[in-house]
Length: 298
Image (cartoon, rainbow, N blue to C red):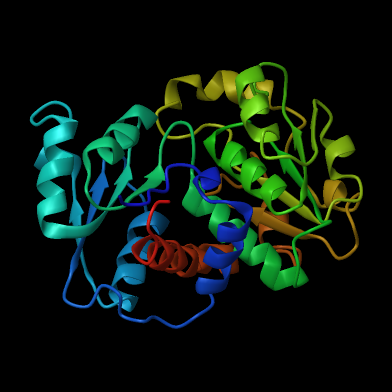
């Protein structure tokens, strides 16, 4: 049976370490002469480029598929798409609106399925984040992450991955944008400590990593005015960073909306590791693919 990566805790803590280790190694051409299907319902700069290049580095041929070419769940059932693509490819990546879509793909696929983003989770981003942090601090255990903003899919996957790696996770969100009880239960099921607060300063105090994401994600454009008002006071500024550990770093999954969730000054500051983080999307994707292709479900 194939191994799938739909959320980061589809890996064990030991396997997470293995993926991060594989991410730093040169390719072994595990996909030499083979294809990898990349299904996109939502467009992306980093996801498409990082996944295509990770596949190329493993010797494979990426086939990127636009939503109008398949019409997954509309023109053709998700079941049939999974079975068809499994005939040609060694793995399927899917960037979708509804997490159920990628879950259904994995149910019918005979090859590994990788969630390249859904409304619930973004495991590839979390892997890139943890790889960036590990490279910076040469360790993960014992560090403190402060996530400022919407408790969204990016925050959820990063929280799970952080606790798996022994990192303390703090999240500061305005009322109505916190993790749900179900999300908190899922996150805390892997162990570790999470602090949820409505005060950004409380989360940032002494933190090693300060992280934020856009306040209005793709598909939420109609909520933009409301969200800008609700997130007032949650902008990551140089003043806010001064509360963190002196050797702290700033991360953002990008694209950023300068002077909304973070100031341009912070993005351009010596704290910022956003471009290394973006590069690591490719390396961590390569590590994840290499792990899945060389693993068998127990």
